[in-house]
Image (tube, rainbow, N blue to C red; front, top):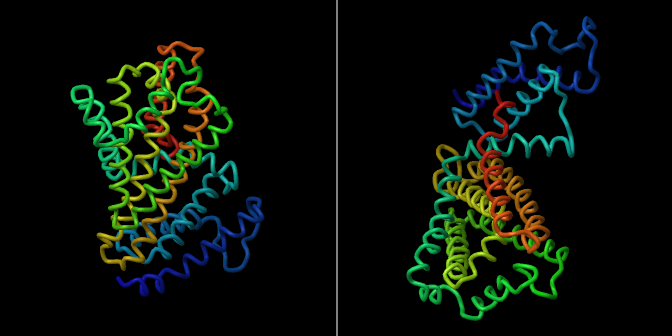
Length: 330
């Protein structure tokens, strides 16, 4: 069925359902009160809601325009909120709900792209850490000697604040880490517009760079200060980079294989979940920056304590992404 015929056949039903939604969202009506002209009587609301959900599924399956799919999706969401007693929320509460439930669900929905991005990022990272233990000179093909010397200074056991220079303070570094993390994430995401090639490049590039630094410092005898520094914030930061790459691949995939849509329409449709992925990744980058600035540099605690905290945070992040929002969805 063509979209125009579909809209002509069911458009009046959607208008009536929307009228009921507008009325009940603005002025919740007591049971038994009369419905305004043109609105649905309460007895017809559940079947009307089910029809909207059915129409939404059909619109998605038939790849109708993003505008129609979005309209039906909004009607279904608003209907669910009103029928099951939850009013639409704004501001902080809505954002918190997204971070606690919507974001991890979205990551699982885009699991194939997230897995591909993780392989492109963590693959080179782990490979270089291992290779450099047996072939340490290979690092000089990847990084300048001056850069390596600076990293050794930052993670020297004699440094009172790991990963920081004497002139740095925690607040200044917090701002720097936010800027650096968000820059990496946005770069990895936005370059997906180049048919995904930019995201692939930056995922691999960042994996190679981090792996080269980690492998070199481990082989050179700076392993304990380096790993105790990165243990705390690594889960938040590294997973956020992979998710940013997945969001970029989402854009690139829409341009490469738009299906029955035009490339513009496919890109618009893909941008919605991609941008929402970036909202969550940005929150993770901010959290990583806070941990990196105020916990990671501390030398008051033994390395075993910092490793334990890092392991707990890895378990929390992975558990959050795997389990978050499941109860709400059910």
